[in-house]
Image 1 (cartoon, rainbow, N blue to C red):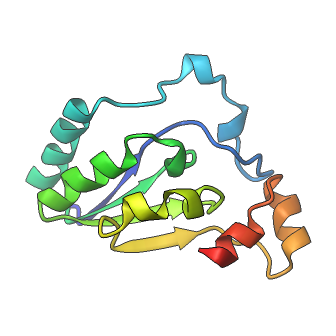
Image 2: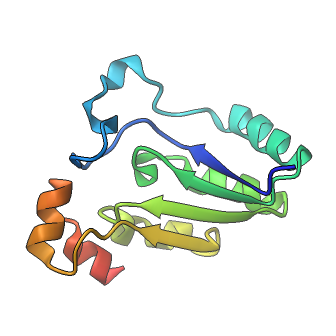
Length: 131
């Protein structure tokens, strides 16, 4: 019986990390958003098979406009939630996620801002520190 699951909220990303190829995909050929009613069916199925913790990831999960709705569905079913993000968009979305995320991880490749930002090809270091 699984205890945890990863839920890929989107297949797009705003970073261009050298170790990942998600950002190379053609956005028009990949779904960007699962409607909340379908997501609820998926999350209910995960709950039914014993999943207690869902890690919401992607691509970049903070690009998913209905992320708060997804998190709320899981929380309403008594599940614990996690968020794995590059941190770039977190400061702008933090308020709407309040109380919906039990555990959070931001990707940090170096304690040196320039090295981190070069690795991600996005200036996210200062936003991660702010978060």
